Length: 224
Ligand code: CA
Image 1: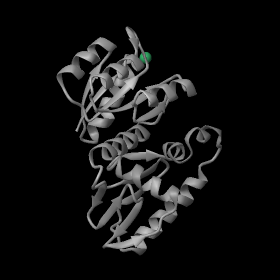
Image 2: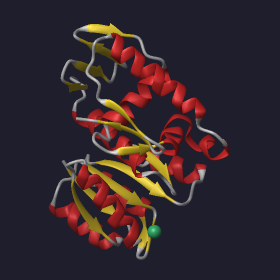
Image 3: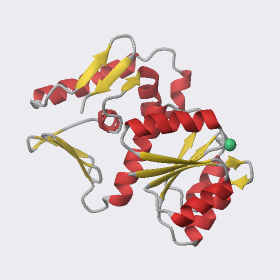
Image 4: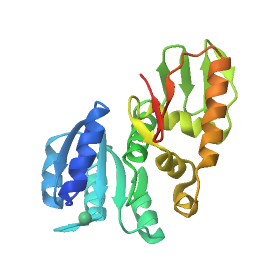
């Protein structure tokens, strides 16, 4: 899986490369619009992470060019401008998702994961790990071919874990994934613990292996 990161903040781009490379994505970076256009012209990407404010223009112009050329690479807009107007224009121009800065890298990885799955596995949109099977369009989960009933939040948690295997995910990243911007306003993350605990119990009851572990004082990790 190949990802193009269009981002002029070098430190942020480097953090994204480091994290996503750990998820087995191959990452390339373009630090401005023209460099990105050159790469897009030459190569196909499974996902493009697109900053909006670039030194030589707007990411939205880049997106427009991309779609005019009929390119279907998945695009996630990453922007410090958390404005509804930008979000709407981006989605209208054919972006697949929109993530506001600052964000957790675990959240980014989960979005990349789900955008690529949605785009590339339209018909058999299924994620597997051993006896676990997740059917994304149906939002259903089976273990040993038995259907497991998860709440919406438990299902979203499971996708976050599967999109960040072998990585420690902090409680604040989990809170943000579950509640979006509301997470900033919350003082404690106890509700996260309750959802994780319920998810874990349901998986255990279905005789699924113990892949979800608690990292003391930090968060959780899903072992591949
Ligand atoms: Ca920028």
